[in-house]
Length: 142
Image (cartoon, rainbow, N blue to C red):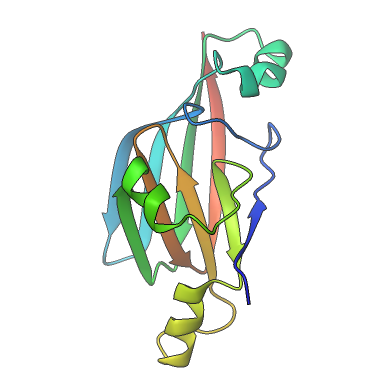
């Protein structure tokens, strides 16, 4: 069974393009099992023109919090791409169905079928997360 990458629809639509997400902050809270990522959207990216046309802002900041985190990995983008050649990613923020990693964790009794696998690709790094859910917020700066 092949892994399927389903783009996550955000307030601004699907985010794609290598330099669309700039990661500024990364925090894992092991007591709460949350992973928080924050940074900015690059509005100069040609894939993001639909956002910059909607807004009169120099920068859009994002914060995404993954909740109920059971596992995560962080790899440099080019290394991740070589290891995941078979994935047909359509965006910078995908939910992976039929995930090999997720299925291995389910079969080992570590997680349930309700847990989800997400891939969050930034300019430099790719973060894969197995978690219960996520929340994403945006705000603009002037």
